[in-house]
Image 1: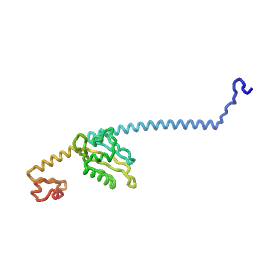
Image 2: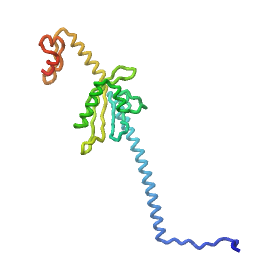
Image 3: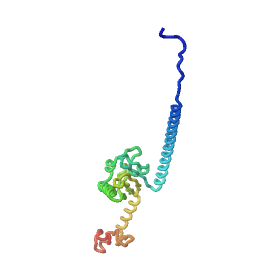
Image 4: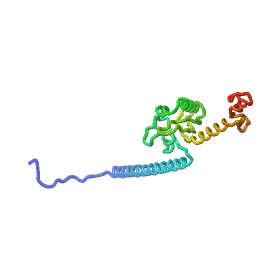
Length: 219
């Protein structure tokens, strides 16, 4: 018969010592890679947690002084804005920031000023310093100052930018109140800087000295 009852007796499996050694080495290497991957994953999670904690601490410190942080690279991704920066810029926490859409919130003059400041930074030393206004929905106009830095490669191609945005609305309002007060004075008033150059003159000063305000400034 083709089929015989009873247990099957197979010859003993022989493993060459060299193959056994290779198997042990491979098992060791695979185990080492798994352990290394686990350690790297743990380190990455720890680093991300520390980065988040640092960002929260920075934003807390900045919010006390009325400043918000921003950071943007050239990959085309959405810029990172701290919660304070989003609040100052009038951007909702879950709102996706789009540069062209955001520019529509600015007055035409401020839009040109902001664009010119960024263009000068891109073609210059990378320093950004610009003051502009935004229309906050349901609120009055807010004055902001953006201070930042653009980083370049060796061939002057921009790779990253970062900076702060500061709310200067209260200062602008105080300056305007002071200007109105000086304008209403019956006497001539001139303001000068540390070099002694005239920076402001009221209407009475124009009448007294016979110069227009534009002519007085810088004298």
